[in-house]
Image 1 (cartoon, rainbow, N blue to C red):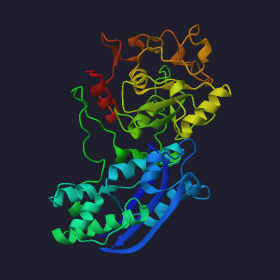
Image 2: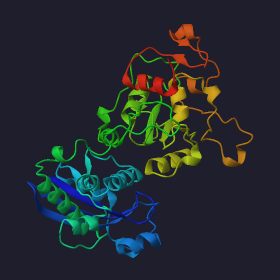
Image 3: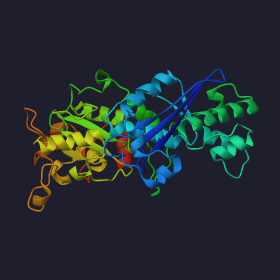
Image 4: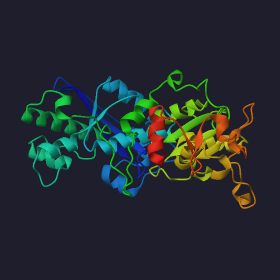
Length: 392
């Protein structure tokens, strides 16, 4: 049994504000290496809140000369050497890794997370399953809780102790699936849909090289609002995985990029609510978004879309029926301006800003009563999108 136990501490309530990491490498059932260090949190989320300081004792002055997240992430994956990550309450630690990486505009290498807390809850009949409660129950050595290095070693020790107790020999015997591979819960509204995102898909997408991204389709409809434009996605979409969204826009003739560039004309912001309507005011959380703001301030035309507008434009809704907030309008002029997306010039008429579209008979597509074009069955992203929107 081999894996790397990992533990993060954060500077404040923002998951990406990582300020320390602890690691313990297990090879063939033995802890063979350990490491821990302080981390300078990403810019913009680097303040230290008193509550967090009271938990782990790390202060702002302690990380002034610490390595940043970019260097730390590289060191973490070198240490793990391709192995699986295990954390106690892995949903927290996995989200810290993901949020810190997104905040710095980096690509997160492909990896898998497993949760030692879920393992303990499944094998130990205890009133509480806090890490120190579990180590006491298993008669493991005492440790300094909320010191990242000590927590990582305790986590590894718990996994190994349970493995011996239950006579389990491998990761696959202890966990049937990695964190994030299970089907997501249905939304509270009760509307039936099949989410296809999730952590594992998300991290896999971010590990893709530029050449691996879905490429523009040579048979795409030039009249589609996305044709000829360049897209950047940030955050997590709820209706499909990011890779499926990239495939969708590529099928419409658009180019995908993992970062914001001088050619970017659309930025799609994924949030926890798929009906969210995004605007330029939502930018600024991640490095990608801050870069988009810089380009917009410099005069570049970038349309900001939430998931709702993105899905509507993707299905062929008329751009002037959507009227999402335009990122090119100063807030002081917002009431007097036309708040419709204005795509960047690409050397061809931009249909996202065109008031009229060719008739359905010109495109070979039928239009239903809702105004959406009925697309034929096709790739998975299209099938999922039609299910989400309730289209036949």
